[in-house]
View 1 (cartoon, rainbow, N blue to C red):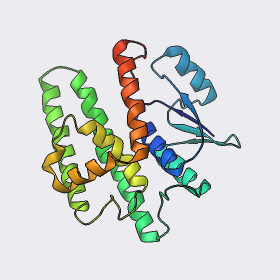
View 2 (view 1 turned 30 degrees about the vertical axis):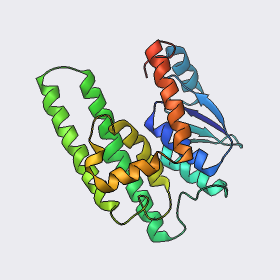
View 3 (view 1 turned 180 degrees about the vertical axis):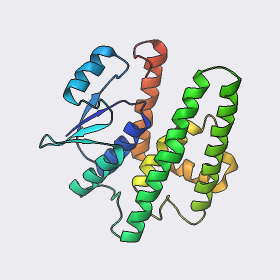
Length: 216
């Protein structure tokens, strides 16, 4: 398999965590979408031009982080099972994954974009976005009161989605004010798969700051 991704993309990080949890072998293909040549070359290969994208052994192209993870979880019996067998828990896992993408990751992206701009209207919009994220953090904290991981005792697809969001949010929001979420975040940082992804993220950030990698 080949994974086309960018290390600073949260959706790419989500897939990387899943692949490492599954102990799945793959060839990493970093795509610099801000580089015109790299973007053009990738768009010729895959016209939508979005990452992450998985190319299977059979040559099939699978986009979208959650779909990639479901495919990998079905194809590989090794490592962590990311979609629970029990139907009720599997449905909840898909629900939480969807909510994290829509109500956390996408809002974080909008918040980051607004902070790069200036003006009074931006400050109002930033405040609204921060309030939305704090409400979602309260939701997660309540969910984790009785769960070890997000959807129960085992790590799932939903946790793969949540880890990169918390990694970003820790610099802007007081996660320690949420007792259950704070406990969860500390145990997440001890997970080997997440540590691997974090190392790659830090290296990519250093390369951006040094000018060796374009700003994503």
